[in-house]
Amino acid sequence: MTTLATLTVQDHSLGGQVLNELFLKFRNNRISVAELIEQRVRAEVDDYNQRADQAVSRHNLVTPTETEQLLNGSPKGKKRPLINADKQVATALAAFRQNGFFVLADNRQLENLDDVIYLRDDLVVSFIKLTPLVGG
Image 1 (cartoon, rainbow, N blue to C red):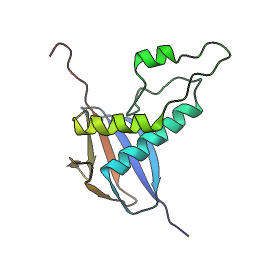
Image 2 (cartoon, rainbow, N blue to C red):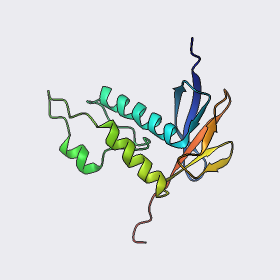
Image 3 (tube, helix red, strand yellow):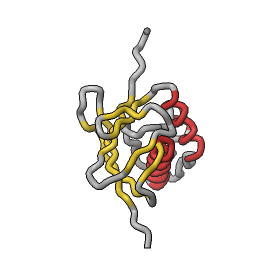
Image 4 (cartoon, helix red, strand yellow):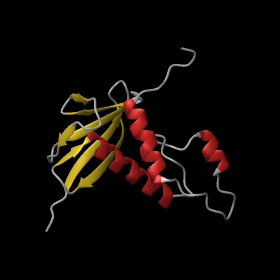
């Protein structure tokens, strides 16, 4: 029987406020940052696709653009198209590489996709999404 490790993932504002919290399960007790991002995005996409007729949480790491939401909007009686998880994972990994968001574990910034996170019950991993300055 395989034991699943549960990881608490929180989204934080730059001021430290918790904006969103989710729990992810992993089969291993250590994962890479890339695996964490992939698992998180796939969980969000699954949730989004299951709630295709409901509003999108603005705290997701990757969300459809306004144009995508307009184009994929759901006219009465019709479901909008499902989001492609592979594409969203690629977008999130690229955003991490370009410092679009930070990942912290044990108050340590993880800077590379291959950095290792050792899972334990009390570990909370924080995502801090950066907002580009307008006109900068």
